[in-house]
Length: 233
Length: 233
DNA sequence: ATGTGACCGATTGCATACAACAATAAACAG
DNA sequence: CTGTTTATTGTTGTATGCAATCGGTCACAT
Image (cartoon, rainbow over all chains, first blue to last red; front, side):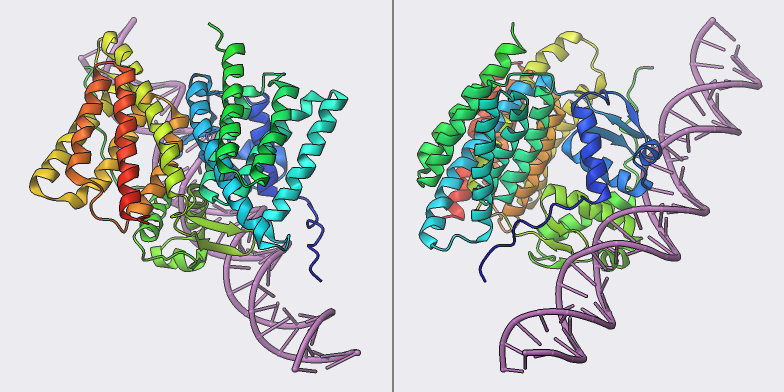
């Protein structure tokens, strides 16, 4: 049998992962405001676990830039990086251009290899579903679903690039971008989403230059849109 | 008295930090080769501490991309990201251009503020010492000191930019670059180092455009030099 | 009144102990 | 002999307890 197992059960995530995701969510969506002191003990009580998983979650969130810690002195929620927005977007442009270019290069090799197995194809199929879900959300007017789908799309492209380094960098930047957008509603909505299929097509066509060009423009528009709405002078 | 305390004693770092730095060093300089399985217990014995500090160090190194872990299954040393080199350099160009630009912008504000206190001035003074040390090393022919000084210079500029997000990103990329360069000797040595003073001068002059231009060129030359020597076709 | 020093509570850092899970190897049916 | 199930071992995940350190507060001298 060559069938891939049906994407093994999501199951319930490990406590540490769950706690980490919950705290990050609370930070991004404002129930934990910047400057708030977060202590391991109270978080442990809040989530019904010991201090250890909380501790690990805080360390991970520190690496992601959501909290800052000083030895023996505790942790506080970081400031929203609004001043860094423009620079983060400029780095993101270079970064995602690279992931799209690489993804297209790899696509050619994968298609010529024949058998649609392996991790590349699994991710590619997930992206196909993702694009469908997004189109459906747009058609139904559920634009509030788009930010989440959007991030997953871009991270998916990074995975297709096959570079763990670039994927990790994008994950870090995406967290910040999501934070910046948390108070936003539109995010260019439909227009932005429709561009995703064009990028995907360029990758499937094994055209690195075109994939890079489309992705760079896509991200650049996102940057311009953000600055227009927020840093409006 | 307004004198800053003479940069409080370095003291000896906390066990976790020490272990983390040691493991990373062993990975970068080859005594822990890619693919090696690393278990918490043996590392704990090796460094004479409990599993907990080792565990935290491994998690941090995972976030930095030096090891990969799967739940309940252990950790292994990552592969050296040679395939990602060119893309990492391209992201680094955008990233460091941004830090230099910001640093120059902030410099103007700091100089006009008057009193040479605060964290900005402390970092600026450390950079002055760093530049002197580097010149001395070049004059004495101790080129093997340059890679370390080089990284500290670039991270210092990032700190001057005042953006924690950008500094964290650069720290992550720098680790990978250092890894790539570990087998190298030259790193353009003298020529590259002399450019640092030009960049610093542009920042001190409060000239963002010039600082960005010089830094971008500096990093680009580093990229070209690397590709010439390693990815030589 | 103000600056300076030593104490005390709060919080993290680390060590030990136990539980949960994955991977490998062995036993067994076909 | 091959494929599958089961046992065992090794490793990580989590809980609890104690030691180290920080931040603030209060007394106190100037």
